Length: 108
Image (tube, rainbow, N blue to C red; front, side, top):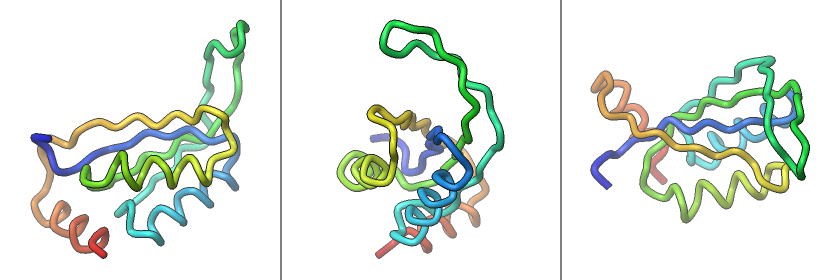
């Protein structure tokens, strides 16, 4: 990997589920910070139908290291969806002191 940090997008069915996922990811030091955006409207194809749901968007800031081995399994364990949205985007630039803080709070 050429990048060290990620912004990860996850949708959840409710504020309560989103808050639980967010809290656990930060508690386990898998994320430095999680913002929740309430509500969002999601339109998607599932099981042969086009569906519209209100969901909550989690915007997660985390380190890229351990994404597949630790982060994704943790979200899958906490998430009620059969196929949760977990999309990671690289952070290519950022305020140095913020990125240092991310390292500090996500290091075991």
